[in-house]
Image 1 (tube, one colour):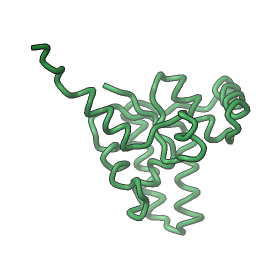
Image 2 (tube, one colour):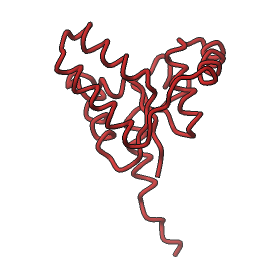
Image 3 (cartoon, rainbow, N blue to C red):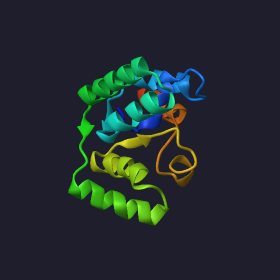
Length: 148
């Protein structure tokens, strides 16, 4: 079994049927592997839904999804140590501290970060797309090939 740490883009994709990763994000959220996220996700999903989409019901649904993920495998809290690691990761990879915080959180709980952020996270091998996570989950659950 894999532990997946989801960034806000996965949660947002699960709500947005126009997002190219929508179906994969929804499947990942309803799969059998444990899911975790960073407390920052509450702020990020609410900000996008409330300010960009101007959709308060979506903001509530998204906060409920973050809560469900947190209730599953946990909510990583940003603290001084995590932010210290995030600052170092941001500097090393030339990404925002926000994105780096998810990387640091995934490392802190020995999870694989899953994101739809190809430019800043996936392309730098700091995260995988939801489809890749789903494939890895399926491979982990497949019975071993017969040695005969």
